[in-house]
Image (cartoon, rainbow, N blue to C red; front, side, top):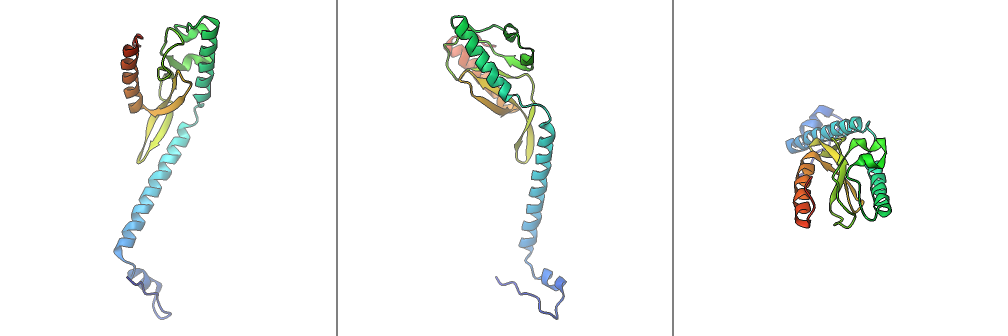
Amino acid sequence: MHIALPTAAESPSAALGQVPIAAWVALLVALVLAGRALQLWLATRGAAGQPDTAPLLLELHRLLRDHAAAHHGRLPSALDELARPELTRFAYRPIVHDRVDEKVLIAHDAEPTRLLIEFPSARPARHVLFWSGRVRLVTQSAFEKLIEADDLFRARIGLDAV
């Protein structure tokens, strides 16, 4: 395919008429996608006004490990026992002792605190903390599945479901 450049005698609008329709469609699609990406980016920036809870979850993991070390491997039955008021933003999924599989979910944001982009939309998300110390940001739908899987996993290894 050859695109002819306009000569001095031709008008610029004549050159635009020679551009194939597929190029115009591709340009329009690219503009729509770029607009949607910008819209999502701006939406997630607005949701980022809340403080990031991941560092506090890591601190919670350290506190739980320290508590277990000081109490012969026993963990608190509630976060109130740690006497840290900033931990009230988390939901705790207690475990009896520190000798459990590292894949057990032990805490998470009590409610969604972030927006996670899953193009073409932004979904509510929350942080979760595993006994290994890993903190992950997951969408609300993935979180619900994760809770179900964690309850099944807890039952399989002999822990009470929460």
